Image (cartoon, rainbow, N blue to C red; front, side, top):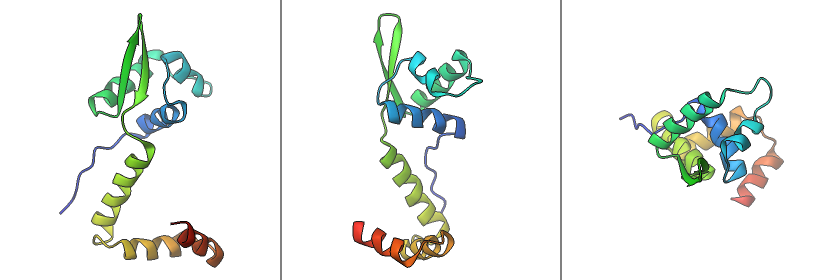
Length: 119
């Protein structure tokens, strides 16, 4: 059984990363995060609208401006996708995922031990 999790597109994820880093931001703040050539204001506005519809972003009106903020934490978003990957690609087995991760990321024994110690 395939589990579908609400996902952001790569451009939405890029914008969401800026918002996670800033915590709260007006449109001008978000535009400043991009390198040149910066996206058009209308493009970022469209992305924000889609992200609001997906319940990832909220806003508060301040005069004629909107201050945007994340409704989902970065950790929560990543965790849901990681759990979906484990369920869909590793037979719902965290051990299979951990084995795959350890082999394919080429971590040293020391790094693996550090991961185990920290978590």
